[in-house]
Length: 213
Length: 391
Image (cartoon, each protein chain N blue to C red):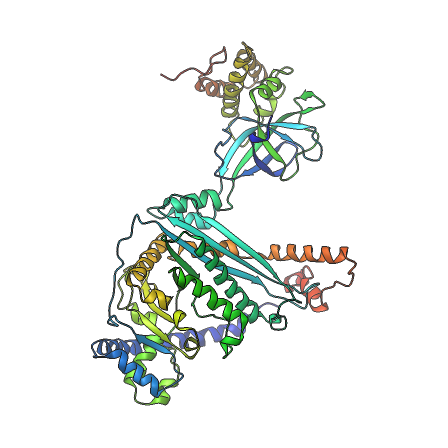
């Protein structure tokens, strides 16, 4: 993992989640549901893993005034995106951590500190984390409250399935969905909503995202 | 203690009466002045007449007509698509306070640079200066706020000139500051003896050499230069002319003359302070309506002599200001100036942080007697408000 995948810094955190700020002109916004890792700065271990559960583009009164104009010049738009101190804010749900080379699907022992860096996960990291154990981290996703859990799960499975497929781990998607069905077996209504969301993501069971007609 | 609202009630009533009364008188005065303005506009050799009156009444401040008819209302040409560099400067300051643990002054200056039609993100340059107490020749003077303000004004112009002069020769450059071009904080009569004022003239001279279109933008001006000119022309009693009237401002007069987007004729500013300035930086001005049909908003634009002699430069400045105001059309003000202000302003928390950095440095060098004054300590005590006592 190189530093080039660093995209933001922690603004606030607790043991379950954190809020990250980064400049709006960053070329690659980590999409909703994508996996990220946060090395806790006071020690390189643990490294916390999380999922992007919300992306919010902040505003201030001045931008509101600009937005009411009929036309905004290219220079003013670039100024707002490049120079103004209004970050994009991401919310990250923690789903586990890595310590001494061992992956855990428990919540991290300590939260990251403010201004710690945050990185996008590589395919190898996604594969290693999601292959470990018996999908224990999915329980964190199912308890998310700020977005519908099914939407988040569908986005995550979509990303992870591609990484697993690229690593020749066939059958991962089916196992993940079976785990979801097992965990939600007593909550039929929510299970249907989650499966509906996963169905809309057009993920094939061998890991490939199906082409839309 | 809170404000005594009971006492205020009757005073607010009296104040409102007074404001309404002034407004009524102002309306009458404005009618008369509008007629006088129209009469003056058709007088032959108006500039010579005003000059003659000024010779009889030395020491007065007023407008002197230049080449355009004074009742002109001029639209801007179309410069859309032209690459124009817009630079704006603003500064803020921390005034020294003897009540703090350590007394220090700080000037923060920002330049905001936009290259219109260049499709580039604007650039921001900031410079922060601690005002040193020992090696500054103005050490004693910097103990008062006005002198820190003067230092800040000069820093704005110096940095503006430096950044404007970096732009390659041949490119169009408009350099803006907020407020009059005349140094606001400078009130001493002998300008040439003050090194800061010379620094200011030097910055202007550099911009003059590069033909940079320099302007000072005054929002909601309360100047009466044109009205004073009318009173000088129409009033035979010199004593009466010297009494400043405050009922009507030039902006009231020009809100009746200028349509949205139009500028007034160009006037030369005559005042004892401006007369002391070098010829190249003598000031002219025009009024500009940046408002709408239903809500005229008159601003005053001051320009130095080299710009006022160049009609093409005035037209480009006129167009650029309308374009800049258009970016904030619901509350027109030049975008670049607003951004320069945003970048320059020193927040209270930043002031505290700088102070802590200085204290830390002094402590590490063995200074231990750093204390706030007793008055400041009492003021800073958390919760010493009327409400908290009550609770």
